[in-house]
Amino acid sequence: MIIVLKPKATPESAERLLKRISDAGLQPLHMPGSERVVLGALGDERVLAELALDGDPDVESVKPILAPYKLVSRELHAHDTIVRIGGVAIGGSSLVVIAGPCAVETPAQMRASAMAARKGGATILRAGAYKPRTSPYGFSGHGPAGLSILREVGDELGMPVVTEVMDTAEVDLVAEHADALQIGARNMHNFALLRAVGRSGKPVLLKRGLSARIEEWLLAAEYLLASGNDQVVLCERGIRTFETATRNTLDLNAIPYIKQRTHLPVIVDPSHGTGIRELVTPMALAAVACGADGIMVEVHENPAAALSDGAQSLYPAQFETLMKALAPVAQAVGRKL
Image (cartoon, rainbow, N blue to C red; front, side, top):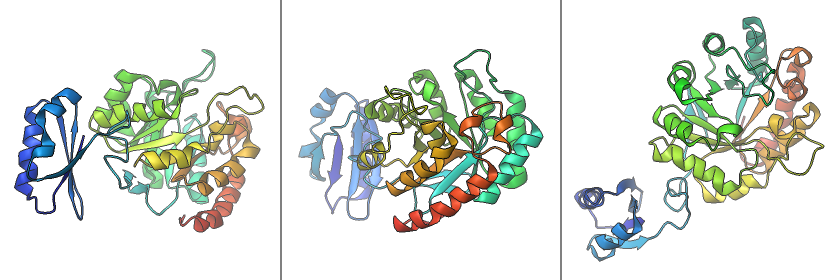
């Protein structure tokens, strides 16, 4: 429920109502605004009805939250959320670019790829220490050793780092090394992992599942917020359809649709969305044009020698070209790089 208080309502009135909500076993939410104070109550609708909050003298109106995702919905939180990863804000006026290799391979490879990403204009560094692979024989990352390399390179270049966590047992370890935790497409429905990452206190980058509907994706984000973490970035990375010409079908119409329904920032990963290096730049430009808060692309010092996803990774010169092409598109939609 959304409870809008009357203009004359005092802070004491809000606290009294929040206590009533809490005492009833419901989750209270306090959202003071410039003109009105708005409260929220999450839980059993029958208990909410029994509270009869619409009869309280300090309450102007009580409205149900119609969306199944309550905390994620704009119904409860009308203003955009700004997520901060290190010193970088995602969701504001600036367009954020996250870049780096698919995987941490060696210290030299990681450093050279990260330097190329930073030189091109990326502000957040990405790379996988743990890699979920379809084949058990594919390179699956160096684990803890990879985390140490990633952290060292990030600190050396002054870039916050984001990397994937794949198991609840690894959340604390990954959180020690990363500025943000990524939940990959294959784990979007791993509810135990969602809860554990939500409790970690670190910003989260939540990728859309391979065949997830938008509502399922937002409900996965709801798990994170319900666990106490509102620093969540959604990442569209393409979905599996009948089309086989590209690795996935990059669902860009999801971006403006989601923007209408959630306050969380949304970025796009055109590398995984297409799986084809030559398509990354045009789809990145399209993502910015349709309202994405940022992009995440794979950049490798030498994609031909990459141990993972070389075919979709940009060469350093290609990344620089992409960044130059992004500037006028960002300006056209009121963003800045």
